[in-house]
Length: 345
Image 1 (cartoon, rainbow, N blue to C red):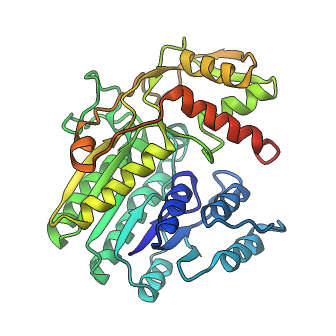
Image 2: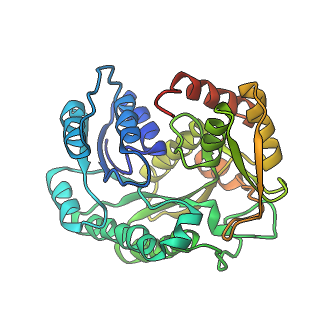
């Protein structure tokens, strides 16, 4: 099978590519190496995902990305530096490859930045996704998985969050764009027969996690004896999901689509385990053997108070069964962080 993966040099994308290549599949990876965080992280992600042990000599961004494309190209892997807002650039990729299934992970991420840049989030997350659907329609590609988000649920009062819950009250532009993509996806499914799954990811963490996310950021600051920004009283809670479990859920989704006809599903992928902010920090302190210096701050606009995934549908349709509890997941993440301390500083 040949899979096209957008956001392939990111956190989730690089782990997914690593899994698919190890199982003998062909992968076309698209990433625009956005300045949301240091592009060098994405280069390292890509090298790890293709199993490259060769050294990489960093110079400047454009030359480095081109060198990465050339260094990683193989019979099973091809990387493209293309923005999903560039429909013409995407179209050239679709012309040059026969694609069996699209896994769309690329997005402008983050609740707080979306409040500052709502129009950028609309442009990337909605219009960019529609470019992919239009090309899938034009090139006869009938299978697609889209990354959605638990942020869609907002401050849902019903716990745990179920896919059947009403989600018409998002509290951030990011969440609104993700919900819009789910709705528009149903249009392309109904009109053009594109089988589709939208996976609502619940706070994914683990090795290669983005540096702006709380677990990575807190680990770095605690290890450097610096203050961590601590919003609220510590009672906010998240359903943290380890990266290996997310990858298993995506692979299950691929298998489900490959064996389905006229499928359109929205599915939660979480751990079904709720961890408060206080518990998260305490777990990091224990794994690092250091005490956090907290800078107490008020809650921020757009933040939800609690997330908790009902994963019954994922279990039924995808045979999804998370296996990594939070304590073990943090231990694995911290070990990875410390091994790569220089790159993570």
